[in-house]
Length: 576
Image (cartoon, rainbow, N blue to C red):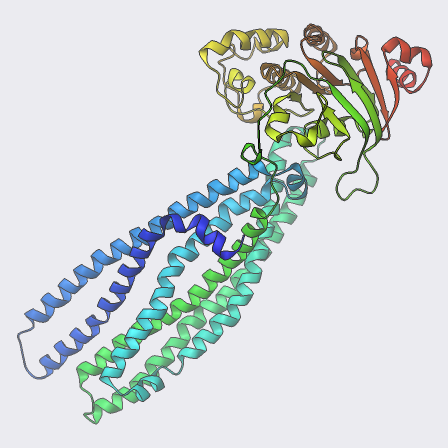
């Protein structure tokens, strides 16, 4: 995303009102320059003994009122519209985050997005809000003030009075580069701190159970120290920058007093002209100091823009809008086939799956067993295209999964991962997620809760499907969260049900109850079931045994048992 694309996407929708604000700001700059001129003329009249000053007072008050109205207008137009652009940026970041592939989150984590939403968007809003005010002042106020000064004294004298101004600009440019570099570093440190803090609070029960509070707090203190040192490094630059911007303008006043004071003594200009000139110098100083602030603000914004550009340039997953031609309807059944499927994760050296060949008919109940890391979950990820398999290697209903619109492909599957994500909503809303539960859904939701033993498990804690859960379902046990995840997948009524070791957090009695409910669906759905509990797969139509990315055995429980192979070894290890 280049500058033009960024402007068109986030700023152009509100640009007409924004431009009106710029015009009002220019008008304010022009009107402000009349105040020193009127004040100087009034002082000259006083020095001549004239007492009719009411007209000056009235003109200055009227001018102040017009300036007040214009200032209100430009702040509303410029700063108000930038709030709307800020909304557009945050909305785009969140929508982008939903469409990003899992590879992004494996590399960056949620802390990066939080930093973009909080810090980087704010930096850009300030740059186009406050920064625009400073930029217009720097151009128009400086130019008009210099022109008004030249009308009081010669241009050569005006230039001599303003000779220290380039020092201010030079200091602003040199220090501004350092500010940009250090600000970007601070943003990265904040991202790391945010991400770790989120993980810390989510993992507090595990941390307490392992008695690792001290080591975790120590590591957090290290990250916090790095964040503090980064901010102090930035603050040190700003500590030099800001006082310098205040000291250098004082030289202009000293030069003005020396040059223009002599002109007053020699009667070459009046006292009123001297007052007006110093008024213009004050405006020039403020505008030039604003240039220093502008450079600092813009350098921060450029650092934030670089981070946003990198984020928006990440390739997205395919969306429904990207699908050309006729969309696939969800079939009543699904069959799966893999032909010489080999897959290696990005940046990995060895394949996670090697030459996998299998056929799963419609309505089958299929088990997947094997040691951790043998490729079972990877196969599920490829079916869902969380990662893309090689073309022509994986098929659902005899159609290459790479040929499906991604939304249509995932509509075929109800997926229950090992770790469940619950929301601070009712039990029913979590089951019907993402749509909120409707009255007509409640009978089916209650049936699913009974089938997955949710009702029995929660009867002492919650009052039915309308009970609200705490954030992330922290008021539930791991097994209870797992049951809600299973009910959520069943509610989808997808023809392909993918269960990834869903019994790992359940006791044997509950697992047997849920298994019985799942077996009732074995002809209605095609069920692919990863389980470390081999006894849960005794009734499977076929079992695939994975080892180091290969399928080393396949068959029914009895067939595999009688072969005395890998399955037999795994079964006896569990029995022992």
